[in-house]
Image 1 (spheres, one colour):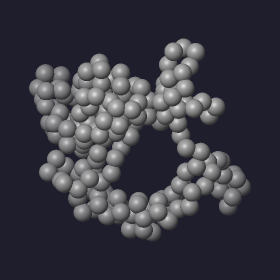
Image 2 (tube, rainbow, N blue to C red):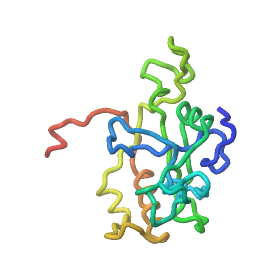
Image 3 (cartoon, rainbow, N blue to C red):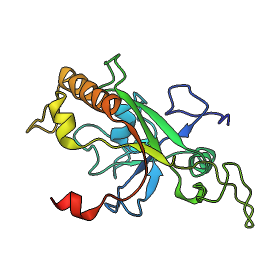
Image 4 (cartoon, rainbow, N blue to C red):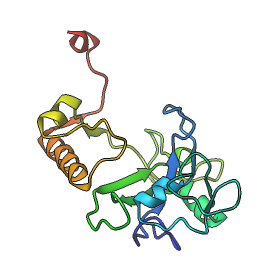
Length: 190
């Protein structure tokens, strides 16, 4: 897919713009909206002009998420509701190190297990993405063992963020691929 006129993808037109999800605090049925102010800051997208507080002023670190609404064009929202969205993640706008990418997955266009990606549906929609049947499972103790550092502060230093990113990458590299499935409940409790 080639998605035109994206602003959050760092120039990668293979993805639509990232949508901020879970703002409704329901991980089983997340609400995905135009990417919010903090996500724009983390992806080095200038929020000025598109994110405003209730007085119409540009949002700042003081208003942040509490009193800030961001807007996206209808074309961007249509694409983000159809294709996987992506944004690169940085610690702050001055940081050159990209810590990874975040992805948003539009629920209406997820392929069912029996559908092929790109399949047209009876209602005229097309499924555009599908979960892999295999996954790497990483547990918290493994990430801690590989150097993840916790902090009591809301903000962390770029050095700590890089160390934690490296701990996750090392843990993922050590985890074997395995088919998706539920664990034996007895072994989980033991």
